[in-house]
Length: 272
Ligand SMILES: [Zn+2]
Image (cartoon, rainbow, N blue to C red):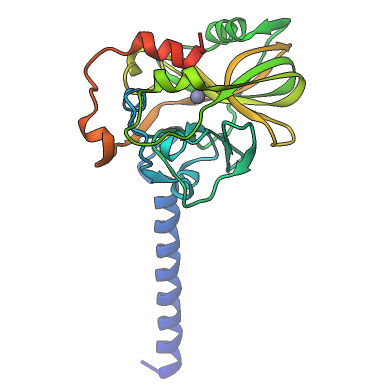
């Protein structure tokens, strides 16, 4: 083979290898096992482990952010509420301050999806959190799928909470929320986002709705306890694939994940 041809063949092979490598990387980063039309919820640990005080961080914020761009959760030692919006991970601490989470921080519990809205549900009238959730339940096609939602708007009222960082030995979550910080907002612009899960996720995630809030200035937020909004417009993604990373160390290893925690979960989620 003439030297010039060999050289160009070599260059072409190198280019092919580079393209293949890039495709592989892209596949890894975007969940190559995801089938066409499938949307994945990536979850760290289980809600019942968090209820039991398994607050040791497992997955870094940096890795979590590579799994999706919209999500909720908490941080190592339960140091505040997590809001992931447009790929940025925000930490709403118990003092009410919000900061961008360091990529090296870790999470003991989080949920994240790649949020590409598939439908918009336009509701009419002013509604509370319970009314909003019921109206969405009626508008969604099935109670047996998972949904990620995003609601941007002006809230006449919104009540959110955050939780203070804990020290070992970690208490149960139901004990921590007795000392939660509650923030009340009036006439606030912002984004409510989160998930609706089916009843069958009991023990693994929160059956029903789990929503967090971030205001438009990105300076306030938390886990949503109550709200009032007029004519909410809700963007929805249907989630039909589930990936869960379980801790292989820390309190998780010896947590009681057998006893039913539904009553305590209700207290923790609703703050009442
Ligand atoms: Zn929450």
